[in-house]
Image 1 (cartoon, rainbow, N blue to C red):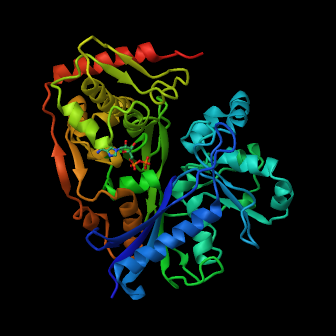
Image 2: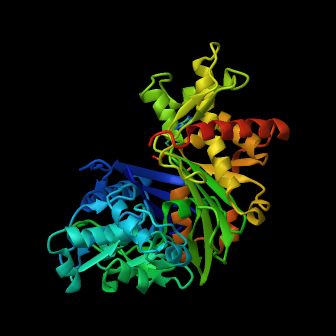
Image 3: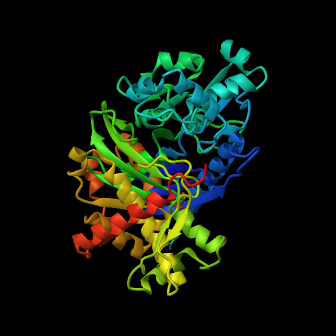
Length: 499
Ligand code: ADP
């Protein structure tokens, strides 16, 4: 009896549930996609009830497929899309409107106002973030200001709010209102040193503190699952024992438990997270500092950088240009030529993020000659992903960067051997692709399993980690540098293209 954990991985496009055993192996899984709503240009919403129901269905099915008994399941852990805002009535449990998704730009104007008020240095110092519509705080404010009756209800103490893990935990436990430190640190309302909500920021955004969940560590008993109207045949009485935002969960799933361990997730975009240990700082470059996780009273912080377009550039080759019919064909094409033929691709479809921060940059293909083939373009697309990750790592302060000796990788495009070899070549460090590909869900499972006692400590978890493949640099350092500087030349020509 015992020995298993269920991870709920509530992502932007789907809700998944995975049953893991003690070795971190996947026993069974289930997945349901969720509807994306785009009511106006730049707006993105989800239905919180659909998030919940799809997640519960995935949970029920994953459990059923596992063939296990309920007594075999020791805990539930949660990883989730970060920054997405839900506001609901604490008596009826009904959301007052759709969830505002992290991608939604509707509060860009509010962010401009905060910047004009000179709030940026304060936000940077307290929260580790920059002022941006991406984060949750301005989304809560928008709901209170724009949903009829919401502010009056909130002032009467009828409404509560939370990011997606809060919404799920509240519903699964029948009313426990908490948010783990990693998710809380992405709201732009959280003091990452005090590990509590910041009253100045709440005041600036006019959000009543009574609405907010209680900030909690990432691995502890939050509550137990209970039967409810939304979940009549609940897996009753399973403790929910861990939660983290998806990127932090992936870092944990990659066993990056100590300072200087770093991972990159190659999905639609890329997210690079570096464990910086227990002392947060305000970085000079525009990277973010967030809570990685709090465990046994100790908090690990992360330095984070992201790029908007990575795997999406491969999808563009497939869906818009029709040059390939599957993503893996990109790899085959790239491998079919001995070099990039001088072709550079800059995937600045929606501007460029760190370290360039130019929303007017646009995509470009440079260096075309009459001899260029689609193989060169496919290769340039894959190379562009590696260059962008190298740029993120290049933006890490030198004293940390010098201590980085390898990169751990995951996400949909991490399967590309060409990309990972090239990544290793450009960075001139080994790239490790783990056997366990479900790193996000695995991180949530580990957090829950640690407090359940399934694993004694992180050292024991680390023994579960093994490489599926290790890529070591094959390219001469000088050649790598030459390619990288040509990439920077291409980027320069893409900057400030659209006014
Ligand atoms: P997200 O979580 O952001 O939706 P995923 O981690 O599921 O993304 O990764 C999806 C991305 O992975 C897609 O953009 C796709 O282009 C890329 N991808 C999938 N298979 C391959 C492959 N064999 N080679 C290169 N890229 C791939």
